[in-house]
Image 1 (cartoon, each protein chain N blue to C red):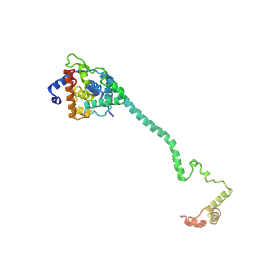
Image 2: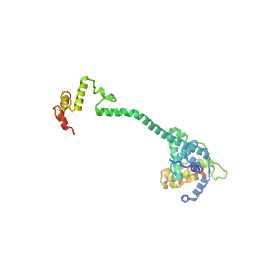
Image 3: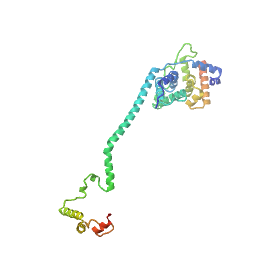
Image 4: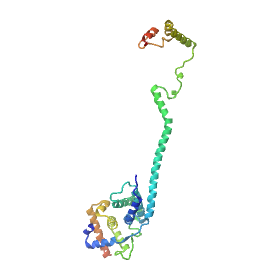
Length: 156
Length: 165
């Protein structure tokens, strides 16, 4: 060996004598090591599968729990947009706009319908003037809407 | 991640295990040294790629693993279990040997730890001074100087046993 050439001949001879000494056998043999390697390899693969199955389980749980949790989040969002309370979501609209049955209202409706069918403009005008003028207003105009003005605005 | 082939590792084990155990025995006791070697080969298996310099990698790993074990123990206990105190044999005695196995062990034990490390890596592991320099974190010239001095010291002790250099 080139590097050993740097030693003097006496030291080189001593070095060779030392190198000739047999090293003691180890307690572990090749078969034991192969077994340990196989065991470690299987353990590593098992750990890999365990990790994958843990991730898949987490994804599955999220996909199952998500639809239950998410609607409440959506309700919050809708409620906040509409200025409603969360508990109001899903309640029938009637609770907010009560429309109690009224004989007067029915009679007014029927007379308006008849006027429309008969094209009795005078009666229809009266209907609007009497019953709806306080609720229906022309945009930008405080005056009650008359049938004629409505007819002018409506497309043919 | 692909493991390194078990057959390939077994071949490296066959070729280097004895010297690796001797090297590890310079830091920890023999039984622990064998555990260290097994751990190193098991760890090697999980590597995706074969190290560029397998031999140097093995010995560097042995040293790191042995030092980690030492660090994880109590200092007092370490002193009790260093190579100096242990009585297990490092070499197999054979009648044809020029130097007796027990004598060689005594000569090695008279060196300090860094000297022993370099001598073991050079003579029994068969590493180059370049590779030893990498493992012992010294320059190549420094490694050679320590090696040369150690060989001379051991030789003189063998030739004049009562003379302490």
